[in-house]
Image 1: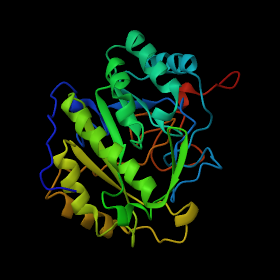
Image 2: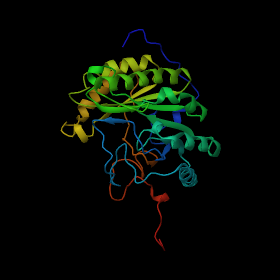
Image 3: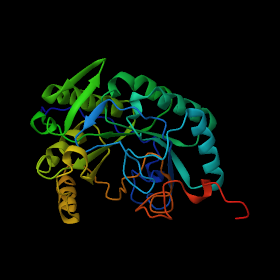
Image 4: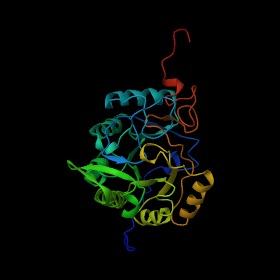
Amino acid sequence: MDAGLIPGRVSTRMPAAQHPCYSAEAHTRYGRIHVPVAPRCNIQCNYCTRKFACPNENRPGVTTRVISPAEAITTISAALTKEPRLKVLGVAGPGDALANQATIETFARAREAFPSLVRCLSTNGLLLLDQLDEIERVGITTLTITINAVDPAVGEQIYAHIRYQGKTYRGREAFEILSRNQLEGLRQAALRGMIVKVNTVLIPGVNDQHLRELARVVKALGAYILNIIPLIPLARFSHITPPTDEELNRARDACAAEISQFRNCLRCRADAIGVPGEEGCGPPTLEQMCTPRFLRPTSEGA
């Protein structure tokens, strides 16, 4: 990556102070609602599996069920009635948001029905350049892109394949297409005034020595904040021991020299609802599942 990167223009339009995934201060004060309308994905990460979705798991890519845009609007309405602290509407899967037309339809409907909600989209970035106009049209102001590498020698170890414009790519070629779209998409989104958070999975022995360079690159392209999250050892990376808290904090501290760090991420599900850390998010137990109690059917006489 060239040193002469074009910096993005950071917008002041997004109320970051009320976004629990962009602000440490907001994290325990305000809520978000993820509507799981996006089942399809167009890349295969070596740490990801969506073959099972236990209701007691708390990790990205998991949902109890996929819902339609119409069901999403109904769910949002019910949630807002019960929880006034909800400030952010997000689509974060369970696949890739931009690989599903239902995502744009949901945001278009929500813009009309709930204009005060901040609209937030999470993506792997493969289709970001192709869909920036649509993203802007439906009023998305906050954008999260998962970028795990900017060096092809590192990136080709992380992705098994991508599916782009009707063709499957593998190896270094797959990563180079993905990375080009991620980084240019980030730059252009920032120039359009969107606030961009970059998520990065810390994978020991793969990208752990590469993160400061990644932080420098995404900051230069206009990223607002970096969220480094620890690997959950699944799929082809099931043999890798996840980073310790000390290793995670050491990586965050090093990258803080380049870009602000978000240190509160709970790796929420694609159907998470509520204030992070309260019911609906956080470490799962049999009594604390993703759907908050106020949206669950109640038994007769309860």
